[in-house]
Amino acid sequence: HFSRHRAMLQSFFDSAWGSGPCGVWVTVFASILCAVGLGIAFFGYRLYSRAFGAFLCLFAFALEAVIGTQWLQMGTRSLGKKLVITFCCVLWALLARAWAPRMKSFLEQLLDTFLGAITGFLVVVLLVDLVSSQVSTALGADYAGWDVFAVLTLGIPVALAVSWHSRGWSKILFVSATSILGALVAVNAASALSMCAHRQIPFGGAPAVLLVAALGALVQWFLD
Image (tube, rainbow, N blue to C red; front, side, top):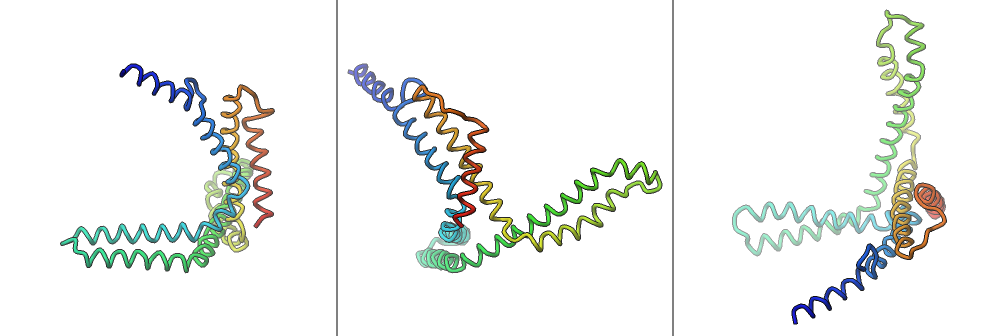
């Protein structure tokens, strides 16, 4: 009886997962991954914009729960303390949901400023590095270290100037990151499905990822 049941169980799992690399549930899982990847590639920024409030709400609730847990471990674990912690968790979640639009605007502005400053400074570093050998030869040993002086003297004001005019750079970052990530997931899942079907997609790998990412970035940019 045990051998028969074991054979039936093995037959069930072979039909579901496949005795090889493919099976029903593997195919379903790969299909879901492909759909999720395409959703992220084409609607990632919109999902981020719509779900930011809910995510911040859950994060505030969890953070206050951690704080409350630390207090709960001090002294007795009374019902009154648990009620206070629960009330504060709900309050934090409601406040986070109410403040979500301002928090989103603040974080995006902060990210815009940071990206602009980093970009401006890196541009100065790159330009100085391109001419460093020629200028060092022309100036001689008396001006050794001029490149460090030039990078700091020019890099800081340029970084500040670019950061003041970098509005919208965070959107570029989110759109680029979600389109590339979604394209990677979708193309790899599609490749796995094609292998299970014993067929080859017309093109895969990096070209397919770049194509899906480019299309996804265009759709995301014009949707919002």
